[in-house]
Length: 350
Image (cartoon, rainbow, N blue to C red; front, side, top):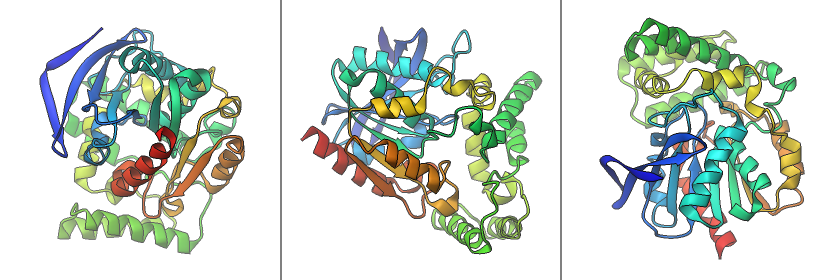
């Protein structure tokens, strides 16, 4: 069953996109759909991210694909899972329902982070539904226990779950949530990189924010001090290193998320029933593998990408390294993301 949410519509690149409500996996999900301009492409965001994170690439991808941008259960306007089921296999079941009901054939899937894990799970379990997938800095081979608990970003999810639970219990406003997020430490790899790498990461981050027009003169000076602490080996807060506008945007997104979503990552339930190596071995479709800038701390370390590439040796695949782009490559480098996606998937669909 599906239907419009009111009359909400958007225009990206002169193309109309509609927002619909669909039923999948026992929950109501938000689906943003573009016109039928090409083969279907399902877009899947990462954990704690909403569909709006893809706004920059929709005008670029829209002319080439029929976009189906799904907002995950427990995120945004999509409903919460009544039993708190937020495992990869639960999200994947939603996507299977989407493809069976809305596409009714084989599709392309591109997923960031959690979305990439979901794409792999769907492609491995239901090869009859998938032509090819794109995996964008997805934490494959590292989010399974016990190794997951030693990853540098692991503590972040427990902190996020605690913040959301306590914030909701207080009944405070989004401004309060923003202050709590700003007070979190800046999560970076636990392994100490060289001073040169630290300086490179500092320079890229500050330059990117400056070029995006996010910084006033006063805020630039404040952030320079925050990143100076980072380069010196200290642990500044997120608020000291990210513009207030970015913190506020994060808070608005997080305010819509079920606290049990990050909790599943914090307690290891996220990958229950989903063996990464087995799923990679079961793949039969081509894969576009995205790697974030190593200085900007993508989730997957260089050694992890070497393991991933080795696991994909039996299928056609392309590895794209994105200089200057962090974990969300589709946001940091939308033109490159769109160009590579269009080129790779065009080869697949002919």
